[in-house]
Amino acid sequence: MELTGIMHGQRRIAGSTSKDAVRGQRRVNQQRKDRKSPQVTAKQSRRHLELLWLSRVCKTASHELGHCFGIDHCTYYACVMQGTAGLSEDARQPPYVCPVDTAKLLTATGADEMDWLRALLNFCERFGEDALFAAFAAWLRMRLAELGMGYMEE
Ligand SMILES: [Zn+2]
Ligand SMILES: [Zn+2]
View 1 (tube, rainbow, N blue to C red):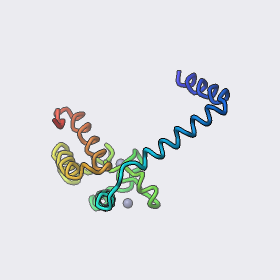
View 2 (view 1 turned 30 degrees about the vertical axis):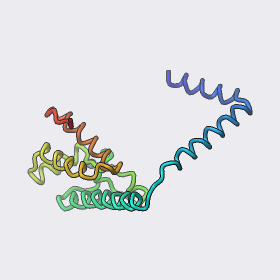
View 3 (view 1 turned 135 degrees about the vertical axis):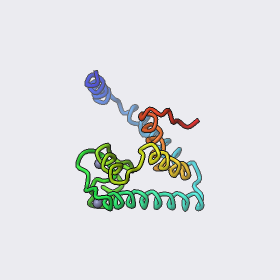
């Protein structure tokens, strides 16, 4: 099914005309124009950079605290405990802890998983205007719901 869609798309590209190319270029130009439209003030830009800095500090601190509790670099899943070899890899590292390292962390700290996730969610919601904190908050809400406690924001 998916392959059929891809093949269909290839046929359309192969059969496209110069008018299609002109229309496509106009669409791209309009999209670029639309992207520039919202005026970003210096204050918004500064806040964005502050939250980007905070999210990176939080992620690095989480990773290093994991080491303090005896957790080595994760080789199982996408996880905040994965090792990174630079800024680009660091940016791809998720803020959450995988199931394997969650088990290690809960054993090492004796924390209750629901309490821990709720505390993380409360923290992320304080900075909800930032995409990274908002995305992590959404992940935490889903994880809390999965755990069967029915914890969802109104
Ligand atoms: Zn490390
Ligand atoms: Zn892990």
